[in-house]
Each structure stands twice: as C-alpha cells, then as structure tokens.
Amino acid sequence: MKRLTEKELMEILKKDDEITEISTQLQEKFLNERKNDINLIIETIEKNDRKLKQALSEAGGLSLSVPSHVRLSNFTSQTRAVIRKVYNYDLPVSIREILEKTEQEIINFFIHYKHIQPALSLMKFLENNYQNTEQEVNLFRETSKHLKKIKQKVESSDLYNWIKQISYLMMGRFGEHQIIINIIPIILYADNRNFSVQNVAIVVYLHELVHAYTFLGFDKDGHQWNDSPLYNGNKDSYIVEGLANAYSVLILKKLYPETENVIDDLIFNNSTEKYRDFVNRLNFNSPRIYENLRRAMIEFKHNPSMSYQSFLNIAL
Image (cartoon, rainbow, N blue to C red; front, top):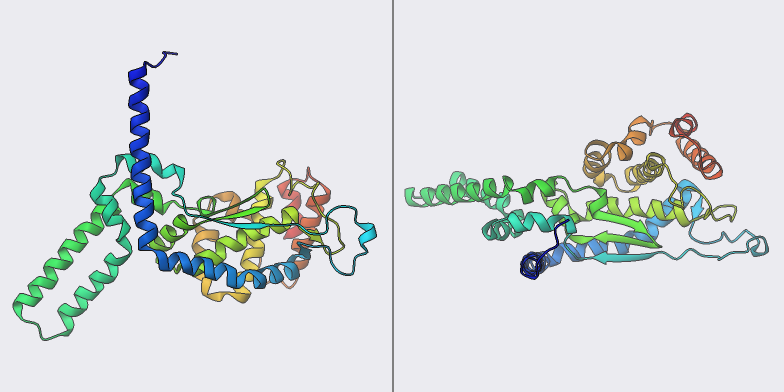
C-alpha cells in the first residue's frame, strides 16, 4: 500500500474539514429553520411517554420494574431497568459524502423545500380565484414556473434521493440503555412523505421503546430476561424487529389511528424485509393475537436457537 505524502495527507484533511464545515452550516441552518418542528417532536414524545409505556406493558406483559406483587426476595438483581431518552440533533454520517457533491444552491433550496408545494398551491389559488389583472396573472404564473424549477432541481439531486431512503435505522436506535431519537432524519422523512412530525415521532419512539422492553424489561412474574437472545448480540433480527413492529402496530392502531399513513409507509411498505415480513403475515384482527405474540416471545426467550419458522408457527 502506497504511503501518503505529507502534502497528500494535508489535502485529505483539508477536504474533510470542508465537508465538516458544510455539514455544520447546513445543520445549523436547518435546526434554526425548523425550531417549531423540533419542539413538536420532543413535546409529543414526552407527553405520550407514560401512555405508551402503560399500553406496552399491558400488551406484552412486560415492565421496566419488578411488579409490585412479586416478592423481592425472589429477585436477586436490580429492581428497575433504567432507559434514557437522547435527542440527537446531528446530521447522519451517511450524508457527508452527498453534501460534498451537492451545489450550495441546492442545499439552500433544500432547507426551505417544505414551503415550496404550499407556495405553488397558493399561486394556483390566487391565479384562479380573484379578479386579477393580466399583469398579476402573469406574475403568479412566472412565480409558479420559478418554484417548479426549484422543486425539480431539488428532487433530482442525490440529497433528495438519500432522503427518500430514510428508514427506522436512521430515525431511531436503541442500545446501551438508551433510546436515541434522531431529530433531523425524522423531520426530513416527514417532509418527504408529507406526514406530520408528531405522527412520525410517535411511531419511531414506540418502535424503539418495544426494543427496550423486550431487551431490558421484566416479565410480569418478575423475571428479567438479560440472558436472552433479545438482550445479547446473538439474536434473530426477523424475530426482534418483527416483535417491535407487531406491538407497535397493535398499540398505534388502538390509541393513535391518526398514524395510519405512517404505519403503512414505514412499517408495511417501505421497510426492509426483516422489518415487514412478520407484520405482513399477522392477522391483526385475530382475537388471540396478544396471546400468541406473548407465547412466541416467551418461547424465543427460553430457546435462543429457535428458528424464525418455529417462531412463526407459534405466533401466527
């Protein structure tokens, strides 16, 4: 392998600094522009936190603390699993290379992209619904034409294509007793799909909360499954993600019907196979769905080598 000269190394570091500077500038501009949406995300999650935890405990028979009816003498470990929420405001690392190749003009348009379609609709309304002079009509048409060019330029960029591919993995993550909520990807995803940031935040947070409960939670008999495949790295991702989405859909459909469009897009249609396979097999109208899900989850915890097919045989 050729060794880099000092000059080559300095050029690489300089380029990296430039990318970092672009990322920082975009991040600061974006966060400043979207303060209201950021506050909505945080307020929505905090306001619904207890409600979601209670619903999840009832649905899965899990808790983040030892149930009151369990004798503590029968439980030798901790009596509560502590989970922190972390709101992350950074741009994802995967966007750095894209920003390097993106024109500054596109980046500036992109920051205000959310307002383009409403502005187009307003121009159309003004053009068609008032007694306008010919000069005013031409002004509305020219403004619309200009906005359409901007919209087309943004939507043909690699930056926009990256946004279209945003998934659960980019919006939230659970690990090391932390639920990390990635603010910027949630806003970008909501913008791209024309969803409310509140609905997207609820769906993303609940998915990660299910992971927290199935990884760290106590069963209703007081047992903590910290030796299970749901806790360590040797886990079947189809089962783990399937459980997270199954409980999410059950709770969301019951308590948050307004999230239906997010559920359909993020869970059933545009996620990778390991996220959608199990929920697409489930009959959510079955009267035994909660019972079968819990039986399958408990069996998986007892039997770490359980195959996905064996899990399906119990859960379906």
